[in-house]
Length: 97
Image (tube, rainbow, N blue to C red; front, side, top):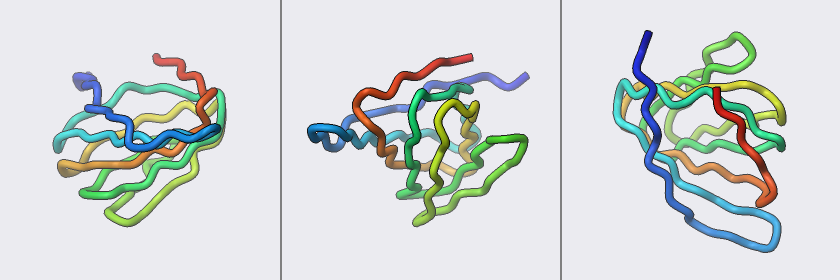
């Protein structure tokens, strides 16, 4: 079983209803499996990762994004060092597995 690593996360911008956070991880890192109470968008700013969602491995490269549905388990594996932007409602809640 692969070791799970927490990403480095920092807030980029915050408004009345939305927040944008930057997440980054190193090549080979497996981030925690989780789900969120609300829909969000992941945009890859630098590098490449694999989004494991709905039994699929979705490759995401620099400049690509993915809308993550609410209540859907997912996990990210860094293929290269990467930075992603995560756009979400402020009231979003996360559950980790």
